[in-house]
Image 1 (spheres, one colour):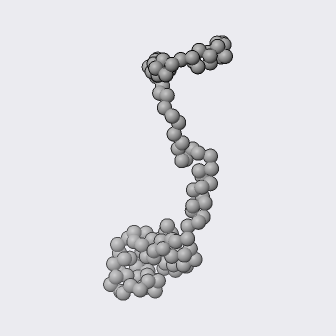
Image 2: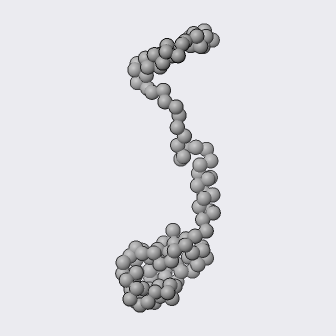
Length: 127
């Protein structure tokens, strides 16, 4: 094995141009690049915890109707009771799925709306 202390001394005595030339030679011969490391969000320690904190702090949710299911008329009535839409507008929202029923509501309101729509056979997602 090479004497690491001697190698360190030799590398320390290189000029900037010699060090750049050595870097290029090593890259060419070994097929590597000497790039500065870039931290990837998914690989950083604690990144997962930070993402979880962001989700926990979320205070506004959207209720999205994915499918009206077999009871379209009951779902239209439920949409009308949850929103201020008229019959024609509620029918259009229910037929054009996926569609947002409620935007930027609290978690409790979103859960209640989801339960009400699912009770009528609709498929609902909270985002």
